[in-house]
Image (cartoon, rainbow, N blue to C red; front, top):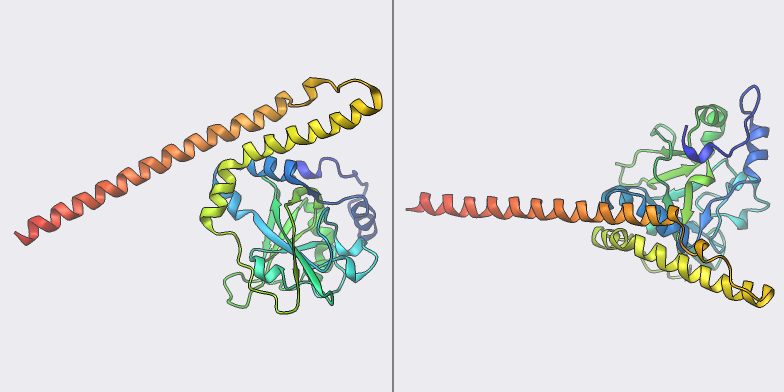
Amino acid sequence: MSEYRSSITKVRGGWTKDKIKKELKNMSGSSGDIIFYREIAKYETPEDFAKNLFYHGSGTFISNLKPSIVLNNTSDFGGGSGDKYYGISLSKEKDIASNFTGISSTGCVAPVLLMKDAKVKEIPEISDANELEDIIVDLWNEGIDAVIIGDHTCSFSEQEIVILNPKCIVAGKPESFKVFNKPKMPSLNKDELTEIWLDSSNRYKNAALKSWDEHNVIFKNKYGRDKDIKSRWSLKQEQVFQNHLENVLKYQENKKIVEFIKNKDKKEKKSSSRLKIK
């Protein structure tokens, strides 16, 4: 069971659909630059980060996501067919996610990060998120945070993952667009994702310090004194920052070794080719 379920209510006799709905009413995903970049920085390589980045589309503004089963009306959620179900649908492809806007004339799409060590299960035989209702109790009893559904190798696949536990995701900055004549919206490419990962700890620290300074102004105006300076950047935050910098160094060193080997192989092949010609 992942750490993202540690704060979930402990139930006697196992989960039921009613107990799950009650719990989900008090749960939502996170959003904002601070936590978004902090969670990216926890991934050890840009490949691991890229593997766990998805997109959510909606006809309304995207912030703290909740499963549609606990929302009041269909205009509040996207990533699905308009039916309510026990999860939040994300797609690996930004353009696919941007199509889930319902009947709204404007849409919104945002990158959504599945946090490190979330417990994920693959169920390729299920192609619609609604079908998870038949096994939702079993999935909750197993402690599953997210389910990859459908055959993602199929050319018509929506590349869908359904988030059962909102506490294991964080939404990044949303992007709005007009639905009519919407241009194609490509996902971030490998180079862009690598650049984000490399700079994630710096973005995290800058966002955290900026937020603290802004809140300190409000605090000072109200109480006539500054907040405790130790809370501006804690040891726990610094540990995340330093761990990421160490992983960046390892990544860059490994990249240099790989490039060295590739260049060496090229030189050897050229040398061998010249000998054959002679």
